[in-house]
Length: 336
Image 1 (cartoon, helix red, strand yellow):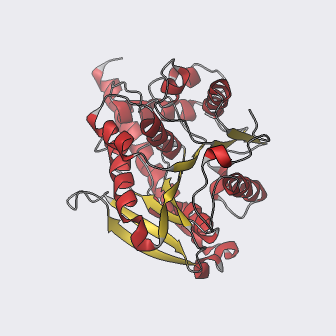
Image 2: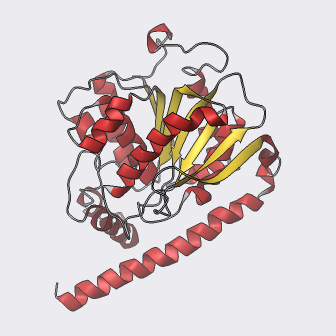
């Protein structure tokens, strides 16, 4: 491929990313007009654009969604938005925070630097910085910082699993070590429809049935985010699939994915390795669900998936009394 062709492709990818950003931002914000959620906003108090890191970095902000009538103990939920590491924001993913806050969780939903201006490891480091801030400040919003849920979808699924991995494995990097030393009390991780190995898009692009558009997007995500770098926290499925043993037990993990999701196989790999490692888990495959289908929270498939999350969380979260250790929880019905 000559330089002029390569330049044209780069321009095309940038233009495509810009158009997708405008379209998806408009669509996600328009979802707020859907009458299904009108009454929900009355149940939640929202604190916007709180700085969690460097005040000179505009992306270092988060929102707090707090239940107006909280339970005695309102667990922390850190939610990380998706968008191929290059698109969207906390503002486009309000529906996840709103839903979970209504169920009694204090949700911290974060922005992070996007790959167009700050490739890997910026998004991971920002996620870790936000987690450290939340652990120190959650109590100011009435949250129970002794019970954490880590969640996110797509790229956010990658980042949420990466945060979970760094909390349980010692990986060597100084910034990852800080998270390990913080010893977050993660009760449940929910990495939804995650792209869990960014460095190898060829496992999908080699497939004839996948559309040219999806193939080009996956290649663009890998190129823009990693720029040729390799690291366990860019591909958080790989430490799980390796022989590396965690220093701390992995928390229960729940996830779901649509059967029409083009990156469905990453969730299948996650299920297989959780089963092999004996981790408490639940994985649901939603018939005919597209990538990110759950964000249209009024649709039947999405409703069922959110309800499944809440049922799983209820097995490990205590809203009323002292913290419960995993050793005290009956796990006989855990799907393994």
